[in-house]
Image (tube, rainbow, N blue to C red; front, side):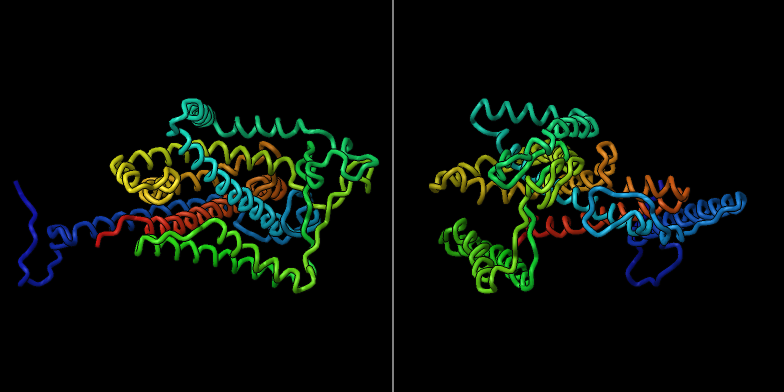
Length: 406
């Protein structure tokens, strides 16, 4: 039997070492695979171009500068039916990112709470969380989108809020839940508001720095500083002081129930499709995250919990300071896949009429222009870029919490 061994160190490089030397053989095979992949992609590209030429067609993105000719109900930037297809694609892209970010945040909170509750010593809490996880994990997400969309649609008509009393029917006097969505007070940005926002963002950074200082002090000296109330003070007090010093540069536009006989006026409206898709993706993916959290907690040795309890730590501090930091090493890798799934599952938004990028660029624009190849390529590029971005950010965070040897 022939065996491959590393050459003697005193010999020079020879071409046969690319296959016989274990130091180079792996790189050689990878290079060959890369050449084959490039050749295959080139073949597909040439075949596509030749077929388009035979049909008298060509790849062109000039249609992006043409008027779109359709309206979009939910949008974060200015848009009219006379805007270009490129503008419509940007509206859809921002809508996709909006629901993806909201769903990732909400699903994480739901998943962590449900995952910890599944391990609760309370029998009823543990069983209810188990029922939630099994029910949502084993039913397709499209079904939950349709179910939650139908439930949201059963809200009251905006006309029930109209009357002589300006606060009739408004929840806490500020919010209105209707079959069109949620109407809430909207901020009005006046001159100087940018400074208030800047101070608030700086306060968020300050909260993270303070919590990092508290954790370092605890690990280095064992001294425990308060966390919750100082964090609240750092977050709110500087922004509030800046707000009043600058003469209250941020106003509030309240929903007005008397301005129109048929609909609410004022405030901003989170429309029904966004709420339905947001909630459906959150509770569905939250069930998967809950299992990841449960698995991560169970992966931590029971002796860690017992040792922490023997030192007099309370159960909540044991979970926050001992169990969860170690469980993150198990939770983060599958959590990345869950975030990617949320972004890709948002393409089902058309089921509830939400205008994401698949509905705008890959739906209406494709049907109007007939540019299927161009629109599909753009969709593929968008989802590829956002997936790679999510993976990169989460991998950096995963590396920061991974076990490091001294």
